[in-house]
Length: 83
Image (cartoon, rainbow, N blue to C red; front, side, top):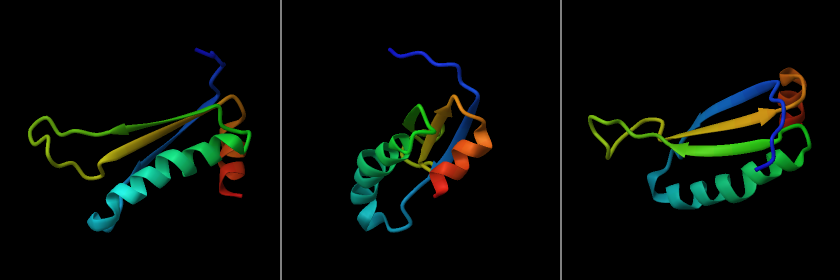
């Protein structure tokens, strides 16, 4: 495991607005979007988690949380991600 001095984190709660396309969205988000975000050079890691409500494990809104970590100044890293 590669260790780095984290300067900031960026958290995103996300979901697909069309349940019929949820599998395609999740595959794109995990395989393409997260990979491209890390490739921009300002983010060191990206991890996506499925959120579960212990009272009702079949439903949670939003269903996913993504956490990006950076060794750069957080505002710079966020702006790099948006460009």
